Image (cartoon, rainbow, N blue to C red; front, top):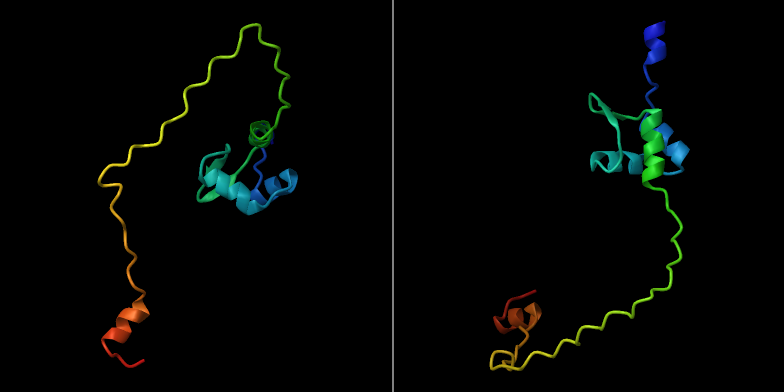
Length: 111
């Protein structure tokens, strides 16, 4: 009895998805890509309560802090890039290949 009380409860992806309000596919996909913590039992993904709390912390969005007015002037902007000079290779004109049906008709194939 005491050994059972010390073991954490393991949740299946469907239970985690229900708590998070997402799909079980999303939970399995994130676990497969190792983006969320999990325990692997055989070929199945299992999650503890600690895993679930960490998943929530990982995906928590914090409000942006208002930036304080800087006492120093802003850094100068880098110069705009100059357009590349046109060389002889850039002046070469490309021609499109004729469509396949036009090429087939020149050989007199029957459709």
